[in-house]
Image (cartoon, rainbow, N blue to C red; front, side, top):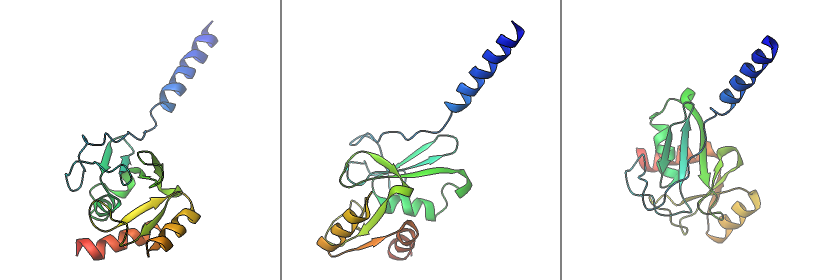
Length: 152
């Protein structure tokens, strides 16, 4: 009986610990405000999110707002659990940074004017860059671009 109670207690503890994993929160378009610029987030093709290790969610209306937030160190890097972006072709759904390829194209306007969008496949990103006279970028390039074009 004692072994069964111990096993049950351990099982409950493991379940509790597993359920404490931070989770991405859906953006309520038209209601949530951007954590960087404070504008209402309305365009479903551009939303993004930063999730902390404690589960706090910061939501953004554009890739450039999230990049500026990160560059300014609003949340220390060791407290960042993950960064999530909307795939332009799958509006309203957020995907982890590791799955994303970014495009900077002046003919594809984003909410804050730096004209950044995100895609989950290299082919789609390449096609969009070609169609809109842009270029593909990785996350480091996006942060550097935002820093030089917007923050300086």
